[in-house]
Length: 140
Length: 113
Image (tube, rainbow over all chains, first blue to last red; front, side):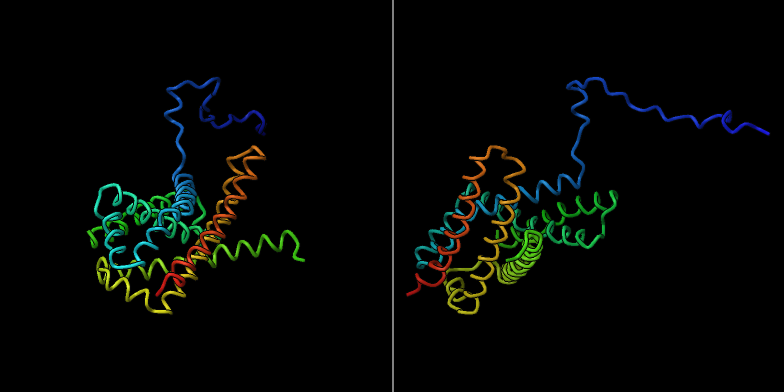
């Protein structure tokens, strides 16, 4: 009879030992993709809520008169800063929507394992950039 | 009176419902943009002259403001620990929600000649 307690244990994988981390180690710490997707959902949401301070005056201006509409067009499309802000707002709303759909699918207990969640996080970012690019290309 | 858990569940559902309303509106707007391109003044005026579209726009925007209010009220406490600053942010968020909503009514309905 062999003594089970004397059987050789499977060799343990060497585990990392953390004593103190330096700047070199900091570069290896990354937020995982689902974390990036989550923080972008927050940033885009807060950005849109605050961004209404830009959107509402522009909407008012565009509806006031034909001259107002032309002034609105000049502001949002006639100069690089206006275009940049408009494209950023569009990207924010598209991203927030796509990420919101992913969020609700995860509410239903689907796509929750890390591998799937990572893939859908990257897909969310890619899809929203593509949709935004298509819309911008259409109205450019 | 609804208990704390009940109101949290109501809020959870309202957040998804308002999100869906805004999402549908955004999809329709993007669809219109893709089909017709950027509107000129006349097309833009015609779109907003339609009362149904105006009411749907009001519904979508107020849904968006409520959705944003609930969102930021959950976000602030995660980053702001100072009670006074938090209180100011909560007050400002509610004020923004009310002001945005009232402003939208004025833009869509009161300014029309």
